[in-house]
Image (cartoon, rainbow, N blue to C red; front, side, top):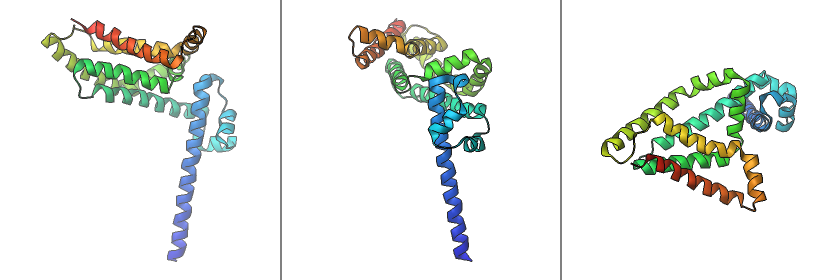
Length: 219
């Protein structure tokens, strides 16, 4: 009897591992398809094919394309907000912290160049996603703003920086960095036309964005 119980436990464990692997394969395929095509143009049959499963299997794990998209979208939003807040909480002198935030945010976008357009496109084409994003990201955004405000108040009191609303500071950083990747195809084409190395161009643009923000903070 113990041997039979042991064999049954092994079967359960193997089934759980198989389920996890299948879900991960579907999620990875869905992420690629959604990032490349957006929600509207993505077909679940293409996701299933890329994941190496049949369409019935995809339906079994995620039921609908909407459910699968929401999981991908939520994952990406969480990565963005958690990445940003970890940088804001870094224990550094303020101007070094700001430089670090800009550079790390830019580096994150270099690793995820399709993400900004993907998220903006979904906000534009489906207003409910914007509301959903606001509710999902609100706690993290609030924490980021409060953390920055505390730092800014201290530095303004010391006379080391000009007063700035933390919301405006975040918007300045995000808009400068994100534009490069929203306009990624155009900028890459221009860099190629001008015989500029694209990776070098990105490094130079990152440094330029740091200078622009730090200049804004100068007394």
